[in-house]
Every structure is written in structure tokens, then in C-alpha cells.
Length: 546
View 1 (cartoon, helix red, strand yellow):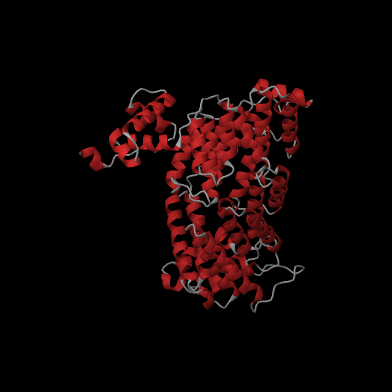
View 2 (view 1 turned 120 degrees about the horizontal axis):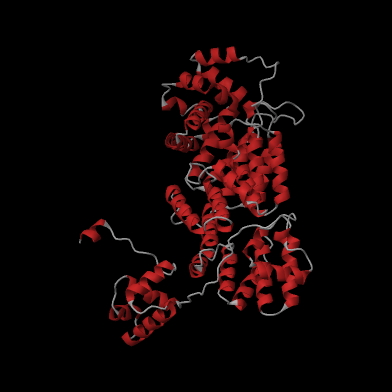
């Protein structure tokens, strides 16, 4: 952490004296001057100075609440007390809700920014992204058009103005809502608004970290590195501040290592990052990075277990595909399932969530691995028309087409598709989409295209190639009959439910058994559950007792 400049008239002695005075106005003034630095160097003193302050006082002093929150975060980070951290964040969420109902009562710009950001964070952490953005935009308008005059960019920025903070939080809100263009605009603005070292740069560091993550996630590795270098110029930050503000950069570094086929670096960085079960808003990006590593280089079955634990801990067992977390969880699951040889589950996942376009790549690979080359080519040909897909997805669809054409003995088409994937690489080391190809087919495609094998440039990479696996295709009515069997209905009851004859249902049951390669109901239900065609039923305690 940078040491205070000699010209700073706030010596450590004066700061400690101010915190010990019991004057809450003085505590807020010190926080205005030092921001994160106050909690970093004087967390214990801040907590002593505010010990016993009623919640009612914090309701009218949002800057004081922010100072206390950061001091608590510092202490809980040092103690690795994740339970206490969750409690502290939950209190901040509750207070943010209250601030949101009376934002117009805060007339002092510092209070309005602190209250507005708390309200934004509160709405966001409750999944109300639209409400969070409305509050953020309203607060931004009040600050921009209010009585406070913006500081010229050629003057020193005062940390009390919290430069870039509101824009950075609005950018994170857009990012988690899945509005990545808006997120990029707001985070870029936040970085431009941010102040200088040593006290006014924290929002700029947060914005640079999240911009690096967005670039890495989209497959723009050079741009991601540029933002990481920008962040390095704002470092070093204390460990607890990095934990709070630069998680995005750590995930970006993992994704870059995976994309460049460097499992050793990716594993080391993931270990430093910690599990996705930790209480942080970017948990879904952490989960996606873990799943990508396990899918390509580790154990896909372990990856599925880890993902399930994360979803349980983060309350995402039924992910909302309209949010970034929901999309990331579904993408992670599909990527892992593909490498466990359960292509039918991948297709079922894609059919359930047709609005998640990124699942189409895993579905196309599932068709390809099952020998359904025409369907794989059709799906990928449709998807490569979308220019807003991440680079890795577009490369992946071109590689599906290249492989399908190669197997169909269409060498010129295979060559064209393979070269399209090669040209999309952001750097020559960008190899992750090629990790799914079989060695012999990758060699053949490289020879056809007269280019080096992309995986040979950085040495041999041990990887998990998705195995071939047949797919089970059931008609919508067959799935309905299967669900009826799972609900312990007889053929007669199912026929009455669907308004068809009993013989028709029995014929459908026989077809289901043939497609699943089973001979009786219990086996059919078990296999269908394993393939993800129907949801596994869980008996309640009453069911088990009865």
C-alpha cells in the first residue's frame, strides 16, 4: 500500500486522536480523506470509535456506515471469518434498502453517493438488477446536475468525492444482469472518473479488474492483458482490498491461462482465488473458471460435484438464465457434461434453455460426438452468423463444422472452416477451442489448411477430449409418458390423462424402452434421470415414513 505523502497534514497521530475523540463528524471527515486507507490502517480504531452507535444513527449517516463496513470487512478477512462477512454484508443490504426509500433526503453529495451506492448494492444483491440501475441512474443524475461542481480533470481529485465509485457499481450491476455492452461503457467511464494514488484510485482499480474479466470472458486476451497492466499501475493493494475489489482480475488471469493451454498456471491461480462458494458477487465467474479448468485439464466428474456444491451454497439450484450467473452456471454444467460422455443431458439442457445461445456450442458438439454430423453442421452454421458470440464460441462452431466436413470427406469445406477458427484467435497462444478436437483430426485439419497444429506451438498439452456417446432422442409425447411412469401412473391412468387409447400409451412405452435400451419401468426411470430427461424425485420424510 502506498505510504501517505509527506505533505499530508493528517499524520497517524492526528488520525488516531480524531478516531478516539468520539466525534462521529470527525470520523466521517477522516473517512472522506482516506477512504479504504482508513480501514486498512486503522480498522480497530474505527470499530472502537463506532462501537455502540445505534442503527438509527447509521440510517442517517451513510458515510459512517461505509467506514464501519470496510473496517469490519478488513477484520473478517484477516480472520477468514466468512460467516461474519455474510452477516456484515446482509446488514449492508438491509441498510441499503432503507436508504433507497429516502434518497432524496440526502442533500450533501458525499452522503448521497454513499446512500445511493448502498441502495444499488442492496437491490443488486437481492437480484433486482433493474431496480438497482434505476437507483444508480437517478443518483448519477442528482450528482451530475446537482449543486456540487465537478472537479476539472487537471486538478487533484479528492477522495471524498468517491471518484468513479457510482459508475463502477452501476457497471457491475449491468455485468451481473448480462448487459455486457452497458457494463463495458460504465466501467470504462468509472476508470476515467477515478482519482489518483494513494487514496482516490480504488474505484478505478475495481473498474480495470472487471474490464479485464469481461475481455477475457469474451476471448479478447490482448485487451484483457491491457486492463491487467492498467490495474498493475494502481497496485499494490492490500490483500483485503484486492479480495473486495479485484476478484475480476484474478478470474481474468485464470481464463487467460486456460485459453492459452497452461494448466499449471491456471491451477495455481485458482488455488489462490479460493472456491466459488465464498461470499462474493462474482462467484459465478469463479465457478465458470473452475468448471473450464476441470473440463479441459482436470476431472469433469469432480467439476460437476464442485459446481453442484457451489449452486447449493449460492442458492442457484434453479439458475435464472436471463442473468449472467444463470448463464455461466448453465454453460459450466454443459461443458462438464460433454466431457463425461452424457451428450443427451447436454441436449436436454439446451432444449430447456433455448434463450441461452451459448449452450448451442455444447449441443453442436454433442451431435458431432454422436455421429449426427448434419445436425451438428446445421446448428453451428446457424450460430456463426451471430457476431455477438464470445470469440471462443465462434471459434468452437467453426471447428465443429470443420470436423463434420472432414468426417464427411469434404476437405475444402473443412479447410475453410478451420482457417476461420484460426483467424479468430486473439493471440497465437489462444488454443482452448482446439482442445476439444481429437489429435488425429486436428493434425488432418492443420495439414489441409497448411498451418501448424495450434497445440504444438506451446508444447504438448494434456487435455480431456470429449468422448463419443450416442444420444437418446425422445418425442415430446414420449417424455410426457416417461414423466407419467416416473409419477407411478399406470398405462390406463396415462391414457386417460393424455386422452388417447391404452394401446397407444403401451406402444409409446415400448418405444421409450427401445430408445433407452432397457426392459422395464424402474430401469427406464433410473436411466432417464441419469440422462437428465426427467428430474429425479426426492422423497420427503413423510414419504419415507409411510
